[in-house]
Image 1 (cartoon, one colour):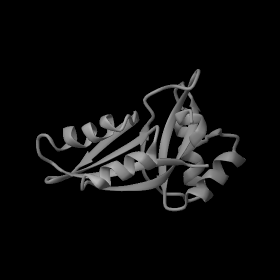
Image 2 (image 1 turned 45 degrees about the vertical axis):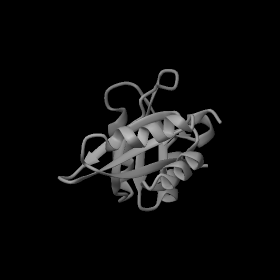
Image 3 (image 1 turned 135 degrees about the vertical axis):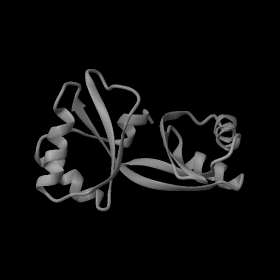
Image 4 (image 1 turned 90 degrees about the vertical axis):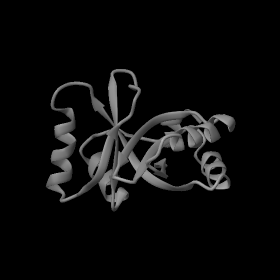
Length: 143
């Protein structure tokens, strides 16, 4: 089971992020990690939450533009060169990373990175063949 990420599109103006996060708080949805990419007038808030379906429905009900996306979460040794090893696998197999970001909490002594690929299953297969641990949704969010 892959990890579900929510992508929230917001106008880049004061209070818009606040309003969206209030919707999630009111629904008792916990944000586990979040990153924001912006262009001049709009931003994309990418987040992993503990209740993605509930969050998606609540945000849409409040007229926010939000979509779910499957992403890949992998564990890496928390030491220099670990991310490089994963990137070498992707390069060797000609897999393009659309974007990536770090998960905010460690899993024991491991760091967790979130990756988006055009074909997540091919990337997952490559990592598993090379001995990487692909984190399942249930392991990441504790459902």
